[in-house]
Image (cartoon, rainbow, N blue to C red):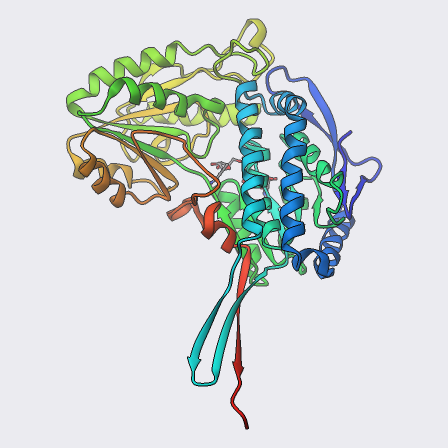
Length: 480
Ligand code: NAD
């Protein structure tokens, strides 16, 4: 049984637990404790206490060194964590390992950031001086989804801690186990104060809502769907909590006729079907110039059909299952809506049954061409292995199509004309644009969404600023 972490203690109330299932087999991986209202209160109280002790918020070198040690601890357990993550989430072992390695890198970067936070001083008038000091916001609730659970937790938690905040984490009940193990490791690090990091597992409508509405939680850092993001923003507005929202995407990739197609298609196919398409930044729409449409269509479908789907623990698999029956049904409903709206099914379009996959949630990699922009399967995030192929005539139409959904997370541009790539990149309403590449994220560079893909930024300099309050202190040193 995996249990909660509150004030440095591992705990859980008797009789409150839920099973975590392996999406490849339907079998139970482990039970997890379900937090109560009392445990949410206790976790927030522990975080408030830890914040008031001067040893954390005012000790940047301690914060830096414990974050660095935490990275080492995760690295030392990489194999065991990789296995657990693939068991509960279904993703390939190589994807789990990449996620955990990126988590280690994120912690190391935050460890450095902790010691480089600087305010500034101002000369405002004769004898009047200002200082802008950066202070932590307070107790942060970190609420995360199941698709990249460990990286997304630490992507927010690491800068929050580096900036001197304390936190209560709420993992998603579909895949909470690896996150909770990683958080427990923090407790084994000498000098890591109890109560700085707490964790309460439970459903969003219960533990999540209790955290968002808790009067002593000063900020909510949320990664998840647009629908839940809106709910959280409404609820946080009751006491004007600070929110950072990292939400869904429907990312367009624009392929011009002068693109290096060998490179583009090999990268786009990985971007589309990695983590079975359950990635906020997945390649969801490929916009192709009409002069090369038929060639791209044929080659992309061939690549799609060559993907070997299977359990994430099988090293020969190239795509794992989706997280749950509910997710599989949602994917299939949107595929059917896309076809009814006029789309042409070129590959996949159904669940995979039979053999070793009969008990799991496996959906075939799917390509649909020529759906109108208004189709629900183009407008809504599917969060599964489904790609829409769309045509455009010129740069103007490509930008209009790419910007034609409510989302604005990431996009990519494929062309050998660098001037055109730069022009298009500046016109796309998204937080990140990749030129002739895809899915390159780094702790030092900001990521986040425009439009309904979110508010605020993760990573980089702007990412850590989200977790700090600048305070202006003015001194008049004139004699009276
Ligand atoms: P979700 O919104 O259903 O849940 C996310 C988290 O919020 C879970 O921990 C859930 O329990 C919790 N939650 C649900 N309702 C809540 C409520 N009322 N109050 C507080 N917490 C609540 O999302 P999901 O299905 O777990 O994840 C998939 C979504 O996450 C996709 O839309 C995906 O694009 C998005 N996502 C975004 C990013 C990003 O960086 N922008 C990264 C990964 C995933």
